[in-house]
Length: 255
Image 1 (cartoon, rainbow, N blue to C red):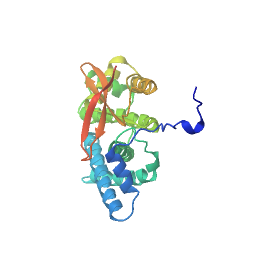
Image 2 (cartoon, rainbow, N blue to C red):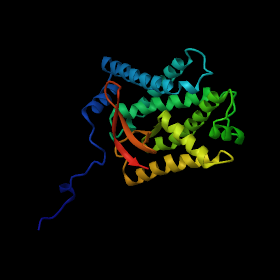
Image 3 (spheres, rainbow, N blue to C red):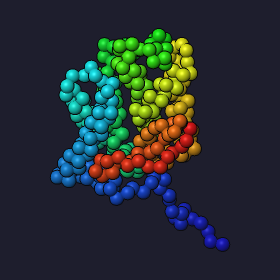
Image 4 (cartoon, helix red, strand yellow):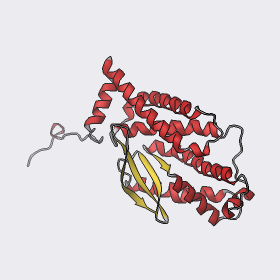
């Protein structure tokens, strides 16, 4: 019988093996001189595309912003995301591509800045009468604006959820159709008050994502997109390639 000694046991590194592109990103960002400067420029360009994409996606609900302000917010978000990433390079464990991991910093920074601008000096329209009007389709002349605001309320709640989800290594975003689905589902299920909106978000977003996280079904996902699949909601993971383009992956779970 062969004795097993401490020296004969090979330690197992629990961290995933980095892909070649991610390893190159980390090497260049930690280097000196031209290699680092080039990597910083490429990373900032990636973050700026992500921030502009997120800002454009919310443009319909941000009509009060002056011309050019969305671009300013996107640029500011990209700058702040770059600073955050450089301060957290050691936190990257390779569970996803580096570009996907970095991408979510830009989305979160953009969401925070847009949320602050969107509701400056305004009240969130969650009164009972407004909700009943939305459900009945009788919002009057300002109905379109109020619908946009209700859609943004859903997004604000998702932004708050992401503050927790980001601690687990991923964030979630909703397509416009998914946000509309949630609002319509809430209106159909309620007669008074806004509490059912929060309950709907917990039932259709937080609970299934938490269960998937516990069961390990999210895998290497860093960005999870919620979309309407038939008459239900479903989730899929999004990865970001080296060109900064989004790649849609397999479904993660079904409601």
